[in-house]
Image 1: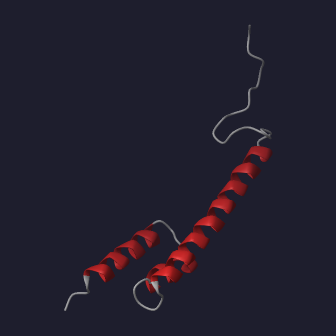
Image 2: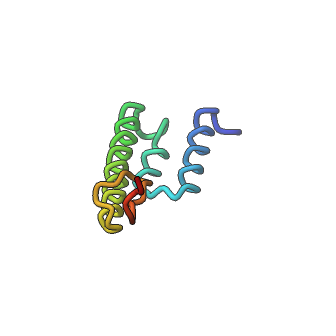
Length: 86
């Protein structure tokens, strides 16, 4: 007997996360969705993971800017190596 549609969706989301390189912390939350955790706890777990990951990525971007000598550059904007001609 096939799994109910909502469990099939969870399995595909889980598979997508695995293919994108998700760690066990995120996979545990996804795998518990609709099974052993209520929706509000899954939502809280996902929100917490997103916030922590966003902070980590921001820190890496800032560190990369400092390491490149760009200091206050915006992400993706290279520092100027010579003054702009008038």
